[in-house]
Image (cartoon, rainbow, N blue to C red; front, side):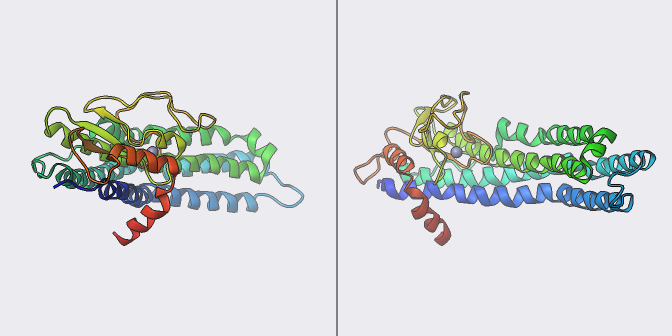
Length: 303
Ligand SMILES: [Zn+2]
């Protein structure tokens, strides 16, 4: 019983929408406490700034300004306190959920493709890339915290006034995007790793086939339909549009960039599909045409 290449491609291309949902849900949970604490801190700082200034004196006096800076520094330290550990835990949870989902999907696709279900004892492994993405979040947000503090100076606030204060907080808020980017990488990398773990259990000759996210960027679309041996690397430096960002490093699989939701599926050259066009060629054609986006978005909604 051979499955049709179209059916398999549709099933595989539904995975990115699910990964996106996981990424959004866990990213929001990971970043929410810091985002809220920064909003509160900024509102408090703006309020204190207004109380310390008048239309004719737009910057607080020297003593008052120094006291305000000390106050904001303490408040910012409190806002950032513990956020790295919280975000790491949430990213690890997100990675585990993504890996469980991807393992189930890869098993289902494998069953369709080779006609026999794969072993059921494959452990859910999130892998080293997802692990580093999760544990790297505290250092990333601490970097933004320190950069924000570096902008919180008497010189900066004297020159910039209230907008100088806003600059400090917009810098601090970059930590929120560092959290969501870390969670995003953890999700996509864990999903790819889980598919790889299954392929390792399927024996010799197995390959990993790149399935581009519907509507993928030109860099990701260039990988669609390409496959590598299990444990190999996809080459860097490929893109359908060399005038846009081209990523030079080789990678074991997605993500090609933060918020990439491309996926890998196990593949063997001997796995036959019906429909005339082979699965790798079909995936490549869809990515190149960019037409899969609409059709699969609706397929994802009805799934
Ligand atoms: Zn991608």
